[in-house]
Image 1 (cartoon, rainbow, N blue to C red):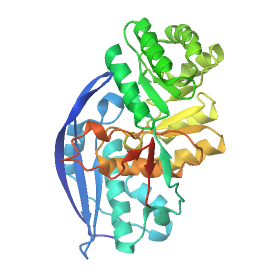
Image 2 (image 1 turned 30 degrees about the vertical axis):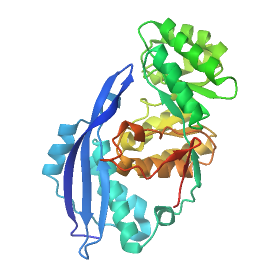
Image 3 (image 1 turned 120 degrees about the horizontal axis):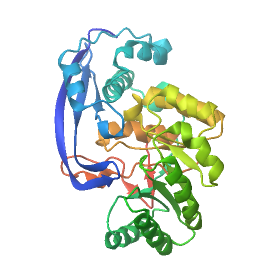
Image 4 (image 1 turned 180 degrees about the vertical axis):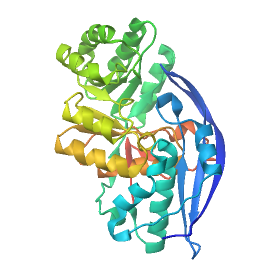
Length: 343
């Protein structure tokens, strides 16, 4: 597979509502739709949607790389995964861009072979994917309305963004959520690395009464996770601390966190994500696949990754309502807290 024509189209989409975390407010998503065409006019597409606030490169870096790209692929289709990794190694420092190009390559091969991605990669997939609802850093009145909306939508797992300046406000929000959902719902908490270690130890102690499934990225330094685990029975999840295969292996081999949050766009694409899933499953860790607020093009990779995870858990893929459905289609509708696939 050589002499491919690569083109790209930038996009800038205003979100229908801001996505607010302790890191800041996201009101728009910028990225690139990448197209690869072969000699016989078969086309594969991918999406590069950098999110520097959460650990990727920035938009300008991807734009500069695309303007000067000279992609020459030499792919051994009988040894596909190593071949793609070798060909795209020059983009390892640009994970979102690498993800988009990789996706376009895989998509193109599927089109040319008239194959599904599942068949191409020999990865069986689940038909149904459980997903969690999400509550950003909103006020208590909005929280109650949102929880009731998620309940009526069939969600049974809710992820609550935390990390407010006053931890008592976080506790107030959790109290609202738990009182409204009852004991049969799972509640996850995401701090986005806002706390320091001593704060985290004290805060985790106060969270016990809410029966939290896990606390995601309570601190920024993953090396301190072990200290937190010794101080609290609440499971910890690593997200921002995983920005590559080596990061994940460090966490897995040192038993730093029992839950891994994997975002394919932030990891450089599907192939790296699959490698981490395989390694994590060997150690019986919980794997949660999450969107990076990309459009449905890029999100399709995250959905596929979630579909191959063997353990039953809710994944972070319910983000379509942040995009105007008249502009960005949603091929992954959620019904009763599930995405139903037709791979």
